[in-house]
Amino acid sequence: MYYKRIESKSFTQSNSLFMKKFNLFLFLFSLCCVYQASAQTAATPDFFAGKWEIAINGTPNGDVKFLTDLVRKDGKLTGELMNANDTTAAKRPITKIEESADRIAIYFETAEVGELSIDLAKVDDDNLKGMVYNFEATGKRVK
Image (cartoon, rainbow, N blue to C red):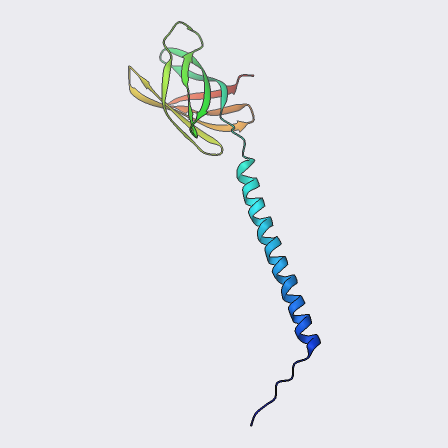
């Protein structure tokens, strides 16, 4: 037995209209998702870039203060550490910086112990707190 397929003109037209609307909805939804994803990555501020005063308290040589201007070059932060108490002293180049959204580790060389890192975490928009070896360190944004 053969069954005759009966198609209604209005059924196929309404089905076609539904598919067009559905495809338009999917396209707009995809476009919104892409826009939202790109907006989130572009809006991330460069929190750690800028001028900072870093204080290391309780070292055998007394409290130490460094001034630094962290600058982003080729996607990476770089800079130098300058002794805030002795501006004639040689600047210490920063050898490496590791950063995440709310933490930063600044590596530099010392004659006494070799490479040290200043590990700091974000406290608020202008302050950092952390450790250098066994000593407490704080960072304050210089405005």
